[in-house]
Length: 568
Image (cartoon, rainbow, N blue to C red):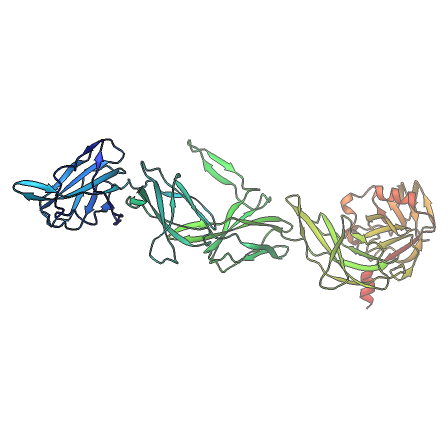
């Protein structure tokens, strides 16, 4: 028990319940003096030690006690006949009780005792030590403590040791009226140790219990900041974040909806029967990044076009215990392939077209008047062509197209992109031909056809054209010179019924439906091995609409960019 010294309280006499127990036998000549500095030297749960200075001309001392607030009179508890004995340990106290003590010196004259006036004090035995002292909660800036109530305690004193105080515990607060305390304003990722003492307060002085068990704990690390997916590819991802100061490392949790990414968890019931639980759509502990200075995590050989959600949880290790901070989450995914974009300008609009990208749910178009910054979204499309609104003529713009798919039904995962430089023009040159604002355009490399009417895109559709290198569709500037519905197309080896026919060349090539083809055949490279005899095979719903809108005489521009490249 650590020693606590109490302020001396003196009195000429103590009268309890109307009885003056020191009213007789008092030295009349005042030559017998009482003790000075009568103090409670120390207290424990089962004892109070009193101490005093030697009395003048004393032959001995009488010590008296009663419970404070009791109506009983003071009762002598010790008769000390050695004047040099200057302390007394009262071992008959109960824990957590307040007591009144008094002391008198005495001198023996003619076989009788003559007593001095008394000195008195109020004190208390120590309360019982605090039990069940534990951490209730903690975060990066505070630690909450709780403990069981100690009977008769006036309050509790909390002591703390940290790296600033070295190996010394320092009092941080007194707590009254409750058995809990939150230590606030702490530093993240720091170790702290605590103990607590109950106390009883008497006249402003405290009698303390033994200290509780020591709690070694720590604050949690701070949440990581700036968590981003900074690198991505068709089969790899990297996430990075800013360092959590003081963290010992980071735990990575991952979630995906791909049922092939995780093995099913197997558990067994009390009878030994296997129970299977899928991890799909659930966060699981996936990896540990050791070392607080390493702030990246990379994965390779992932599935293409697959969404992944990551949570990064910092941890701090102290005395073989781990303390975890709050997580931060990033939603990302492996990307589709980069769209192969052709960009140009017509009628003061920027236009871009591209090949379909496997796995893409749509495409978003970004435009800027600077090459490396300032890109703004101009819209999205599920098609493979996009036209902006009319912009400033003769001005240079930069355009990029990102394929995307969604994760968690809200987060778009964008592909990489290439930036295209375009000068906005007023003319309407298609391939190398000047046409008006109403025309049909067919790109044989892309196997795609577009119909523009008065500058507005009305129809965009994949097609199948003539068998490459054997029955190629004729390139150049043509026109729709004849329409018929229905029609029989007759050739050297065929006689075919079609619902809609629009003749384009004078040697029998035209646009028509082809009910013998599956939807999956249109576009792509079907024309390389199963192309038509030169006609433009078109899905039924598209050619039906086109037949209704297209007028005889509409220009038809057919081109194959790869042929022009080969000529170069």
